Length: 207
Ligand SMILES: Nc1ncnc2c1ncn2[C@@H]1O[C@H](COP(=O)(O)OP(=O)(O)O)[C@@H](O)[C@H]1O
Ligand SMILES: Nc1ccn([C@@H]2O[C@H](COP(=O)(O)OP(=O)(O)O)[C@@H](O)[C@H]2O)c(=O)n1
Ligand SMILES: [Mg+2]
Image (cartoon, rainbow, N blue to C red; front, side):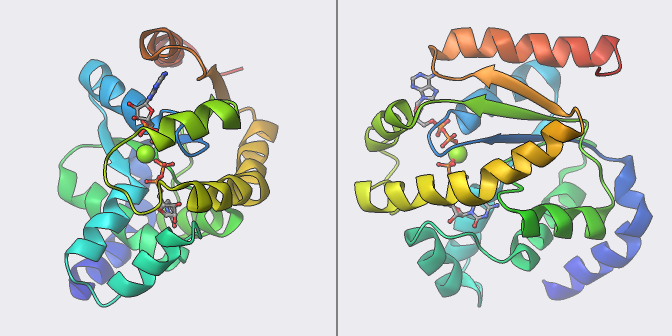
């Protein structure tokens, strides 16, 4: 496994730049995964959820599995080295060249590591803005059997989002890359706003 990734890294230096990437960010339960499924159907991107890749890594029995599982249970952010490798590997294996990267970068370390390893600059950053009250309600009724969808871990994830992830969104905002969506509305209404962002990104250079 490591060999594949290392080969990817070497070849990729410079060549990953051919990939188009949209980062999909927002608090836990803001609807990132739900909207990504819609975007894939309409716009032909491949959806890569950093959380899903980490959960698959736990299931695969990888040597990092226990460490990843403990961090997810505590709502902490897994070291970038692990997550960037999983993302890079998934991009290379997909056969596509357009990606929605969901739930990443979640902190400054994630952002800097991805940028230096892949040299990819995101096309734009979709930011799902939603109140904690609504996100909490959604997470508590998500029913996917996730070990981190309990009130104790949810509170920790909200704290990490405010302290570590919002600054990354601010960083991209200062570069004019953020497309903010009101994610507190029903799924269909949120998707209308999302579609408008993708449609206009094809016609014009972002202001
Ligand atoms: N706009 C919405 N209104 C109400 N419920 C939603 C909405 N978007 C997503 N959900 C539900 O909320 C939960 C969390 O959504 P999900 O897409 O998994 O969010 P995230 O990936 O940001 O954590 C899921 O059960 C999903 O069905
Ligand atoms: N870039 C990332 C993304 C997720 N994760 C971990 O995976 C957990 C679940 O992430 P997720 O994106 O699936 O969660 P949601 O925002 O979809 O609810 C996070 O709380 C982190 O513990 C991470 O460490 N680094
Ligand atoms: Mg998700």
